[in-house]
Amino acid sequence: MADTDVHLNPGDFRFAGGDVRLHTLLGSCVAITLWHPGRRIGGMCHYLLPGRHPGVAPRLDGRYADDAVGLFHREVDRHGTTPQDYVVKVFGGADQFPRIPGPLTGVAAQNARVGLDLLRRHGFTVSACELGGRGSRRLIFELATGDVWLRSLDPYEDRATT
Image 1 (spheres, rainbow, N blue to C red):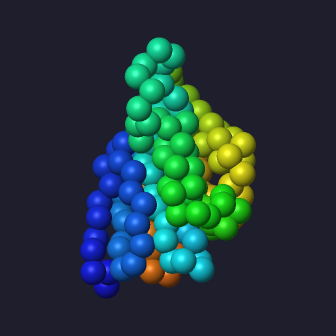
Image 2: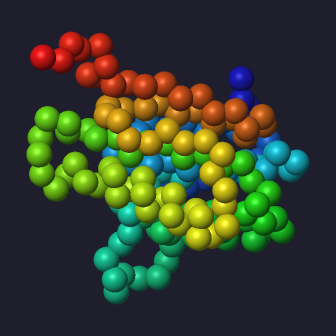
């Protein structure tokens, strides 16, 4: 068991080392985990939207994919490492309203697509991802080992379709 368990809410970002375990619950949001196997440091973000509206203050905000990747890049630089040094995993982007047509259903797919594109453009290589689908996911990330545990909480999973 980790000495420190930290729950990330939507919009949160955490970068740490040592015996820290990060938890989050995802729906249409996306979580990115970064882990440096040699230094045993890393972090996780939980973003809600692909990007913010132009003209908003320039302070990095973990609620947005572009800013969350920017926060990771800042930590990578601060630790004297490079994006290629990290094991990167991406999760979430599930459709939370599979039976309701409309603009809300597109946010999850946009979150997933934009996150992967931003990581690639910033020099990160994704080693694993589970994106899309429907329902929620519970995610646990162990910084001491780099292990990620994922559990689907899809309420539709056990239902028969007609």
